[in-house]
Image (tube, rainbow, N blue to C red; front, side, top):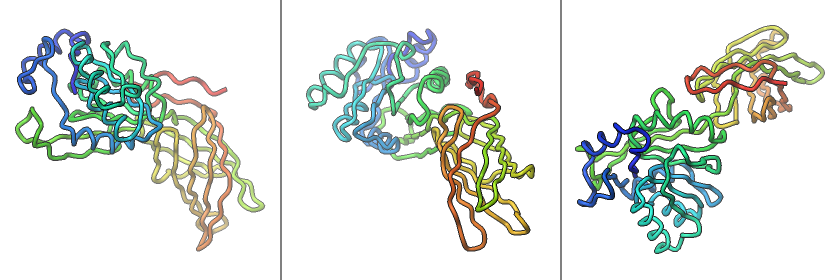
Length: 306
């Protein structure tokens, strides 16, 4: 599914031409492309949890099979982009033949000139260098919660949420006939300090959460009435955040489990308190009082909390 991304970097075309042979002896333009085996396409869409209401954008869309399959199998909509006009024409013909031309469209354009904001799913099969070149654009323009799935190549130090290796006997490149699939969910901005009051029966506790963030990985501390502990099992998936902590209150250990959704500089959710064999749930509404820069290199300067 690689396109002819010579417009991105002049040297990239030479690398591709030297290392990737044409598929079935057919060369669309001066840079050959590589087809993703159909069962790998289907696995990528399965891993991305594609549904009818999804909008799929394929970068380097080749013969169009990714978006066509998403439209035909799941009823999704989307488009693919590729610099090779003949591949784009082929893809649009194949979409028409499959009866999904209204939901699967293809354009001859550079991925850097492509508006990715409609996407709920982005699929890629690009060279590792191009993955790293496009990573800042993905993190800067895709909405938190957008799913990204890549064939064969990862995103450097951005750890995938899921990865797998599968047999690919029909794969036209590589000697081991294996394909790797990598999956990410674009993380929201969680880093900073958050404050709220937590009601527990007749008591009201002052809480402050300090969160450090590296892509979707979180760590930090929770202070309850001035006593601080390291949070446990922190998780960030898009704008959905969760973590746990344990405190002793009046000599009794209490486990706190927080789950919520980040909305700009607020978190709304539920807190579950467990003491002994009993548990209660109370609302959790936090406000961000300090905005911190995530640790990863592609992070953009955050907007200060009001």
